Image 1 (cartoon, helix red, strand yellow):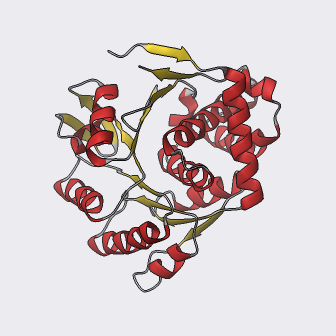
Image 2 (cartoon, rainbow, N blue to C red):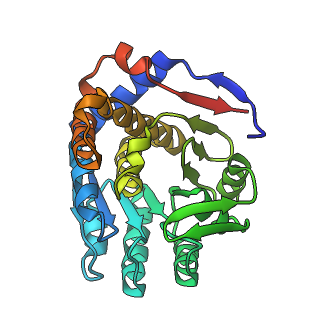
Length: 285
C-alpha cells in the first residue's frame, strides 16, 4: 500500500473503546433494521443478537418506513436483490435519513452483473449512506476502477485499495469499508487498516453479511462511523481468531462457526488486557 502507517494505535485504548461500544450496545439494545440477503438472513439476525443488539428483518414496502422510524440503524444488503427489494431499501433509508440514524449498504456482487451495479448506484444516488461496505472489486467498481468480480468474490482490482477507499469516501461523503485479508476503513480524512481475522472466517458462507450487521450495531451507538467501523472489524476479527483456538476443537466450518458465534457473544466480557494483546489496528497518513 502506498500510504505509510502513522502509528499502530495504542492497543489498550483500542481495546477499551471496543469494550465500551460493546457495553453501550448491550445497554441500549439498538434495533437494527435489516433489508438483507435471503441466503444469510438467519446468521445476520443471530450475530446482531449475539453482541446485544436487536435484529429485525422487514422487507415489505408497506412497512419498511414505519420499521425504520423506530430503528437505531438500517442495514441494506443487495446479495439477493430484486427491483422491488431495492424500492423497499430506498424507502427505509430515506426514513433513516430523516431520523438521522446510520445506513449501512453492503454492495454484494457489484460488478458481477449490470443490475447489481446499477441498483447499488441508484441507492447511493437516492439516499445518504453512512457506511458503504464491500470487497475490493465491489468497491472499486463503484469507484469507477477496473475490477473483476466472480459471483460475490473479488478476483482482481487495478489500483490501490487505500486510495480507492479514500477517493470514493470523499466523493460520496461517507465511510468506505473494504473487507479482505487486511480491511481498509476510510472517511477520506481518517483511514484505518485492520489486520485482525482468521482464514476460517472464509470457510463458510455469510461472514461478509454478518460484518454489515455488526457495523450497523456499532454505528448505532457511535457517531464517528469510521472509528466505529474500525472497532467493529477488530471485534469481528479477534472473535474469529479466538474461535480458531485450540485447533483441536475445530473439526471444520461447522464447529468453527458455532465457536465463532460463542466468541462474538462473549467478547464483551473479556478483559482489556486480553483484547489489547490481540488488536491489530493501524491509522494511516
